[in-house]
Length: 174
Image (tube, rainbow, N blue to C red; front, top):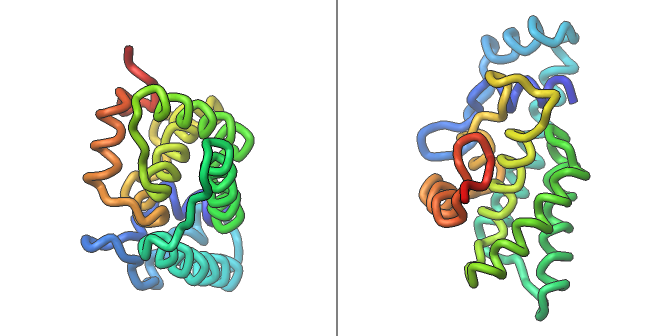
């Protein structure tokens, strides 16, 4: 968890085409120095994360997410994917993210506006991370890492943020 937290917050793991960068010895050394963990632990953790995250992102980007009918079914499906995201990368407060997901779904219903699951996941993690009192200003998850992990385009992420009036601090502006 310590390794992934540092990886998400301080190292850009996405390239310009929003794919995972190749691991470099410098990147691994940076994380080893910051976390005080052995090289092999850091390397294994990152490789395992990249493998699982790549498979998950590929599944999401293919659009093979099937939604049931009804609001509860849609919320249940979104919770299912949020749980998967947290299992792969436990870098956010899961219980708070579930509460934020329920709020997001109420907001989406009110605005007659629905987002792809990839955008929902990215927004929920963004808002949860930005409103976590235990995180200082410069320790937030890097947006590019978040969008790459959730297979969400920058356009979709920022368009949804703007349409829902969510500012850069993760607050809803009224």
